Image 1 (cartoon, one colour):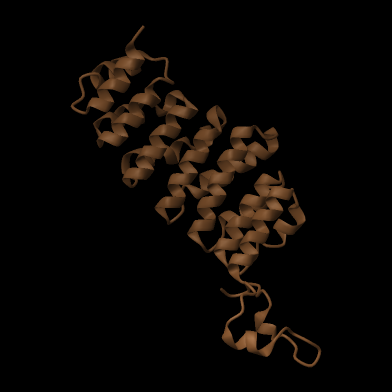
Image 2 (tube, rainbow, N blue to C red):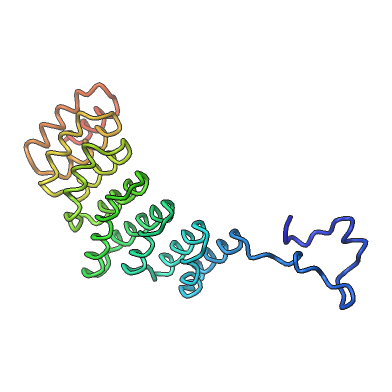
Length: 236
């Protein structure tokens, strides 16, 4: 294995490196993607934000994503860095940035940081990659009632996104709980089974007779998981 130091037949015959017989440079541990990725992960566990920050512009998206997570672990991931990483050319990095944005929102940042991060998440809901959009929808829901700025786009996604984006959007509408999202959640009761299940759970956030009626309708759904979820919410 490269960089392991294990000796093969030729290196054993050559003997240990000496001044007269130096070890070739190719035998030293190369600065590979995996090495840099491990360096980023270790920096996060040590809380070494400077070390992790030095890797956010790495040529490899795997390293950039690891550095992003390390900065979050070190408590050094704010709106400015998130904005950079949400504009990354790699969809995997952007998705990871959305995930970390949601975790940051769930922890309850300062109002100023919260509003900036929510704005970034709203922009990410228009990303060209469905996996990024799904993660952005989840992040918007983590903001709770403070995610109301994402309502318009979430309502659109709940009706016309990919199946996973629709699920995430419906769940986020329930997590936000704004009355303006109720019609979209009720409409999702006509969607695929997975979307209907999300809609049932989301209805629990709305104190409205229409939400209760939707739950009663879902209690007779053809999908047993939808029925079970509705029945548990209707139970006294």
